[in-house]
Length: 291
Image 1 (cartoon, helix red, strand yellow):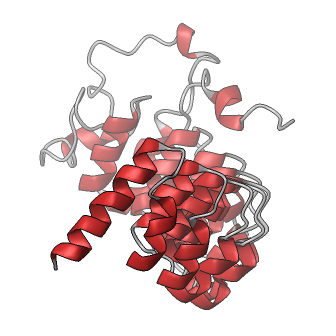
Image 2 (cartoon, rainbow, N blue to C red):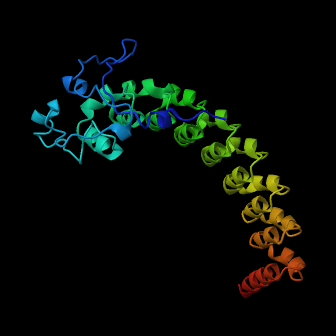
Image 3 (tube, rainbow, N blue to C red):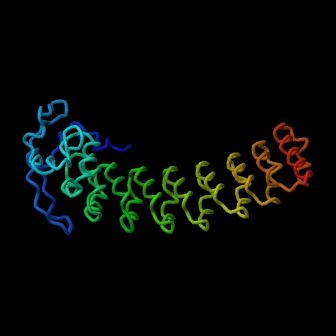
């Protein structure tokens, strides 16, 4: 079982913006740390102990520049609060601050900063200890970074990767342990690779395959153990393949096959034990004879 999220362990910690960018980073940009960040270094150990000042902007060094220009404001857009919305609004208006926040101990500030920081800097957090931060990275990642993140331990990160990875690279996620990841793979995998998921253990994944396989290949699902998968396949099969599905033990599959089977094959189901199947067959025969 996965240990508690670092986000949960840190939720009570006051936001600190005291760290400089690590010397080991590979950023091309090496800017001096803004002094305003240092004014928020000392904070209580838990959010319950924290009482915001009555005038939070009075001692903030941003008041003479950013605040004066209307690019931040208490209760609206502030970098030094626990509100994700306010942090996001601040960085949306002042993206030049985002890179300074990538090393912040507060998980949400890092995750939001990833959206606005220079791409190269944001990619450094591909292995961040918090899964929400890594998901934010995956939303912007591409190339080798995205390929590496296909091995992330968090399913939501891998789902994000599966929705953004180049189709040619999706094969590496075909055997992912999480069915939710494989569903997204099935939706985007090149048609020629779809047969690799025909034996997927989860019917939800095989349903996606039934929706995407070309008609001539749907006969491969004729004996799928799940009747809903067979029904999805039957309603798109080539006529001769659909005719064989009229003998399926499940009425849902037979009803789906009625729509695709040749008219002369429908005579066999006019006495089907299921009334809905008989009605569908009779209606299609009547419509065919009318033409």
